[in-house]
Image (cartoon, rainbow, N blue to C red; front, top):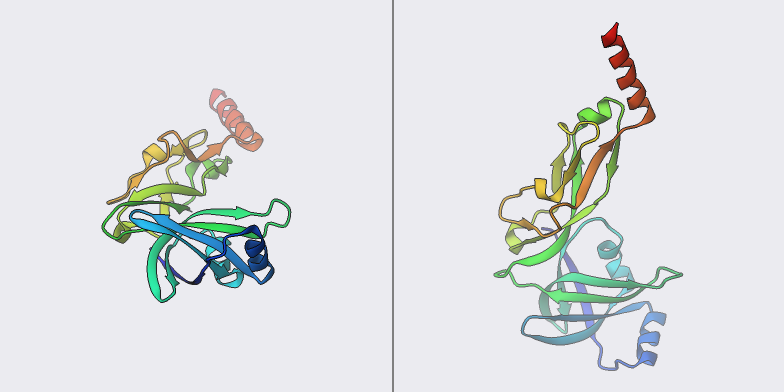
Length: 196
């Protein structure tokens, strides 16, 4: 999995006024927490996190705070309800020897039989939560839909990848091929032609 590098500065003043001042100066307040780590409050530049926040990709994050590097994953991002400005980021420490859970983007491959027959592909899940060791985590989860027929769907329980486990519910729908009026018309015409 790809690594994203960030530099942070420790925050000692956690008051609302200090947080407001940080945001005014183009900085985002953050916190790092996790196993055997005391919470570290720090800030990062809004410019530095754009590639981490506004992307479909998932990353392991290396955060350097006061010269010390920490491995982490982005656990939560809070946005302003009106301006969509990033208000706060939570990072969870990661350990190369322990499994971590992280959302990974789904990549649809192939053209389904159902679409060729006039159906419409509906993608319901753009990411799936996956658990595994850092070394085994892929950048994307490829799903080949070539055999997906009209009216059929692919769910999380259908998918298998080496050395990782999908933690979404097994009945989570990834994608489906829905009937369209055109497909229904074609099916009706084919049925009528067979009767002649």
